Length: 200
Picture 1 (cartoon, rainbow, N blue to C red):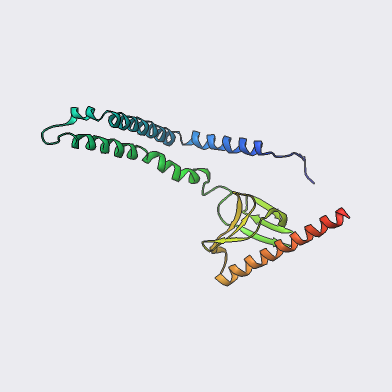
Picture 2 (cartoon, rainbow, N blue to C red):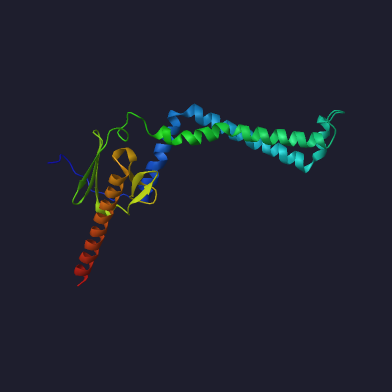
């Protein structure tokens, strides 16, 4: 028997708030990387602004011209240097973007590690020791396969993944996917029949 029970309706605003809060939490824990990326974006914007200024008035490049580097070659060289500098200034931001997902999940957290998948008549249980999730068949939108993994989409951008390492062979993986697809189809048929009975 549970000690306490709460019933509530989770809205998109709640989900949006959670995502924003967790994003700010990750940023606070990696402040140095975010400040470096921000500085790079500012430098990139400045260099692009300088490139535009030189492009509008190319004669400004005369200050950089010399007998060895006459105009308009000096103009092109300045423009190329500014554009290359702008690209290089974005490297910290690109690196940060590539590491964003890794910042959100830790190796010793409850989302990664040894996992046990239990198929039951009414749904699936995903157990990771410190965290267990139960999904009824109605929660899944279908079965998909990508890179030898079985994906069970729950919503537009969220799903359950069963990696290739969970299966001893390709045949076992295809058999599992077919079994899940059959269970989902049976559930959908039963749900439609229930709706028809409820309307009559």
